Every structure is written in structure tokens, then in C-alpha cells.
Image 1 (cartoon, rainbow, N blue to C red):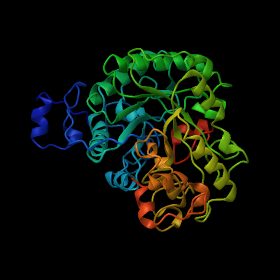
Image 2: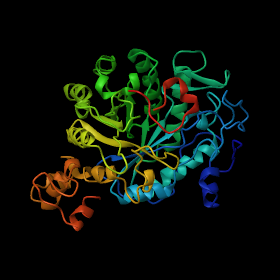
Image 3: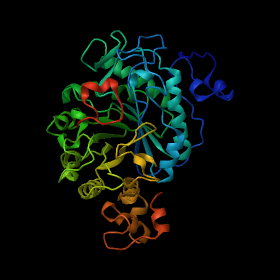
Image 4: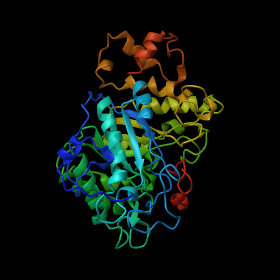
Length: 433
């Protein structure tokens, strides 16, 4: 793939009905949305659509060297989620998609122009989300690292003369310049930094935040911590101390992104749940409440075994979902789905794990969507259907906690990591929190 350069005005290019992935100016100038927007929901509850982050490294035909693992290729070593998947989740009431991608696919040359072909594929998904009324989190899924052209490898942001904080800020300056006219776009700074200390990562994150805020003050930024941004270690890892007292430099919206799994090591790699794991949000949630911040749970899951959610996961998942109803949580995205996610026990795509139709966890999540106390319908104490949705949670698939089973119309209305040193051979999975 070549980086396409255009000298014609963007509006003229778009009017010529060229594919979105070709319709870019040579420099990063703001895009004009094409799709007519559908209303955005008041809640942010959805799913990760995985695939564009797999096997990170350049494709090899942008004029830069491939990584040490060889050249990467769409549909061979990585995949892009589809608009059909987005339609499926929207149809089930989900309102937000977290879109993981590899940073080197968009910027294979430090401080260079973004790759227009790979960027165009993301624009296609963002435009579709705009048309159907969904948010999209743009998530560089690179664990606190970015591509270093000079060394043809990934390096830790802020540690070297190549992957500098300035380089990281440049990437976000370019991406936010492009998407500043999309209210449905949310900027997730980085997935799960883990090598940097909390203070070191804060310095890198602030460089990116300042770059974004020099361009847009109205779009939401999700700020992760280090130590895999785990909720259960938010204060013990130093994240709480590093970010205490933080204020957005332009007064714009932000949330602190945390991740949490329920299996023994908090990694999301086993389809079992530890006793008490549903309360693992408490450390992060307590810090959010004490400091007056909102959090966003960017990754969580629990598995099913042959189509059945294990009894302990029923208990712990119920506890977790109840905790996410607290006012300090601004939303969540389940990990994960996507074309190549495979049979993991937690893949929400219909038909995964040999299960016909929806996964058992889908009903759990769908029936927690109206739980938020600040959602318009949930504020109406006289809305029996809303109260039914509020009770129709994990422990009562088919009936509420009071024993009442919602009818089908009411149920329908409720729907409105591999090890760290193997990251360059990324395949579906999770990292240890």
C-alpha cells in the first residue's frame, strides 16, 4: 500500500464519490463527516471489536522496513472489523465500540503522515457508527509502546530517543486533527501501558493530552494508567497518586480508563472466576469517588463453558455489573469480539464457540444496559418496564430478583492476553492486569 497524496480539496474529492479510504488530503486536515448523524445514546456501553491490532508492525509497502517478525498483511496476519458486526451490536442496544488498532499501521514513520489506506478503513467504521448512532473509541493497542522507524521495532514511549513523548504527541495531534468534527469519536490514549512507572507514563500521557486539546476541547479522552491499568491495583501501582488532582488543560471531558478481569490472575485468559473477583473494582472505584472523577471500564469479561456460564462467574459477574451502576462509572466495553477472535469462551459474536445465535453473556450485558441511574428511562420511577430492565440482571436470566419473568416485549425493549514479551506476535487474547 502506498501513502496516497492528493492536491485537490477534500470536498471535491468526496464529491467525486471516491472510496473513503482514498479520499484524504496530503496533510492531516480535518475531515468533513459524510454520513448523516443518528442521535447518540446517553449511555456508553458496548464491546471491543478486535482484529486491527493483531501482529503489530508495518505492512512493508509504505517505504519503511518491516518488523523483525516480517511484513504484515490485511486478511493474512490481521483483520479489520466489519460494519455488519457494528449493526449486530447496535441492534442489541450497545452504544459504543472500542476499536483496537496497531499504531504503526497508521503512522509507520515517526512524525510522518498517517497511512491513508489504513486510516481510511477506520474512517469507514467511524462514518458507519455516526450513521447508526454509536460512539467509537480509537484505541492504539500497543501497551505503552510505539513503532520506531530507525530500529524497525517497538520501543517504550518516553524511554528512547526514537519513541519520544513528542513522537507520541505528534501521532495524537494528527489523529485528532482528522476526527475533530466527529462527536462520536473518543480518544483512548493507549492500551495497557505496563513498563513505565506511573509518573513516567503520566508525563507521556500529558504530552498526548495537550496535543489533542490544542485541536479539540469537546471530545472525550480516556486516560489509562500503567500496570495494565488494572482497577484492582489502581492505587497500589502508583496510578492514583500520579493522577490525583488532575484537571483537563482545556476543561474538556475525560475519564480514567481501567481494565478488570475475574480469573485468578486478572488476565482474562481463563474461563473461571475467583471468589470475590467481582469486587475487584473497589480500589479504582474508591479512588474515582474520592477524587470526583469518572472511570470507564475498557476491558472486562468472564467466559462460558460449552454455552453455560460457570456458577461462580454468575455470582462474580453479577457483583461486577452492579458495581458498574455506581455514578463514578461512565461506561464499559466488553472484551471482546471481532472476525478472528475465535472460540475463547468470551467472544460475543453470534455463533462463536459453536453456540448458535447469541452468546449467553450477551443477554447479561444487554439487560444491564438500562441500569444507569442517570439514563433518561431509569430516572422514571413510575416506568414499570424500566424497573423490570433494572432487575433483569445476571443472576436472573429469565426472571428478575423478585421472581417476575419479563415478557418478550419487555425483554426486547431492554435491548435499546498472551504474555507481555510475546506482544509482537499478537493473536486474540489478553494481558495480565
